[in-house]
Image 1 (cartoon, rainbow, N blue to C red):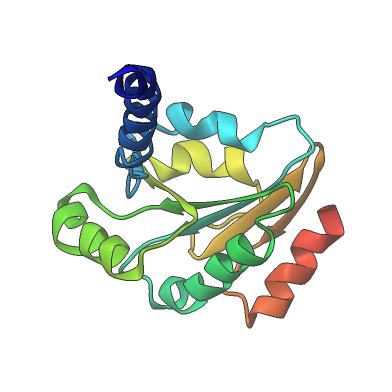
Image 2: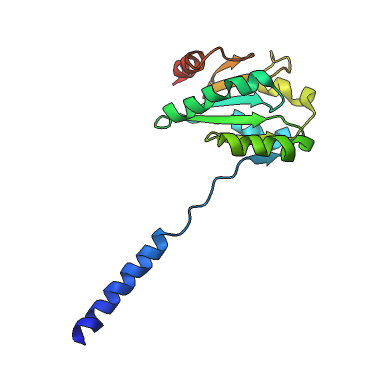
Length: 168
């Protein structure tokens, strides 16, 4: 009986620890929604030692979809470095349920995905890059005050990777 009374607290602690470890992990949301550009604007001005790769895309844009694997590969290969990939979807609100969500679920993107619903493009495009004509895909890569703007589809992963390495 003494042995059981001594072991009970130990078994209780082990049981509690086991139940804590088996608690389900919080799932990362598929995307975060931003209704206005002002809500998402801070991602363009981070003063840190992280290199930010911000790609504007949409599910209806074939060149965007073709280059998407390059961003996922970048996210994976630079996961140990201070590189953050943010995929900003410009899908229309009416396309979120029928197109965007199924696309994100199928592709299981690991990069951060933001949905920007602000359709007043002419009001904010110049705030991203004055030379941007509004076409997508486009990518802004920056670290501190240094930035690179790529106003078309990437030809391959090496092209994207090289631009990121310039700022690391």
